[in-house]
Structures are given as C-alpha cells and as structure tokens.
Image (cartoon, rainbow, N blue to C red; front, side, top):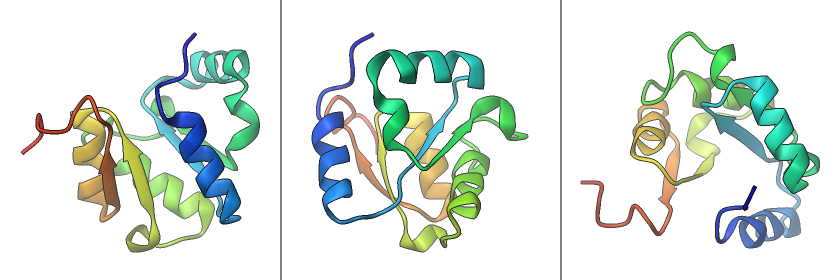
Length: 109
C-alpha cells in the first residue's frame, strides 16, 4: 500500500518539533491497523481514531473532536493535514486549522 506523497516529510517535521500526532481516519479500526502496520506508519501516531469509533462520519466534526480529546488538546491548537473534501469539512467544523493536500487544492471552496 503506497503512502501518500508528502506523508513521511510531514511526519518528520512534526517529530522534529516533538509534537504529538493523531490520525483521524474514516476507515474502520481493523482495516486501518492493517494498512498502517503494512506501511510502518502505525509507530508514528500517539492516537488513532477510526470511523467506527465516532457517532457520525466525516464531514461531521466528531472524529476530530475525539482525536483532540484523546490528545488532551483544544481544537484551536491543532493543525490537520487533509486530502479529502469531507476531511477538510470535518476539521473545519471541529475548529481545527486545516492544510489541504495538493490533489485537493483549488477543488475546495
């Protein structure tokens, strides 16, 4: 399974700042764990919140709010890296600052 372009660089940049990282994925936990383990990404996140752990999926803010709560941080202090329109909408609705992945730039208004 390929890792999205820029993912390793983003992780390295966050690691260099000694900041905690959470993954907020709509994928259900069993599939997410398997995919993350195959890529080696599983070792890089302090918290993983999956779609089957929240009442409403993206674009609802639930998954981002859960990730913030588990990290013990306020949404306004979080930076999200997103590559999907529902993800951008979810982060924004949660009060999280969003950086949009390159394939979406210009596609979201």
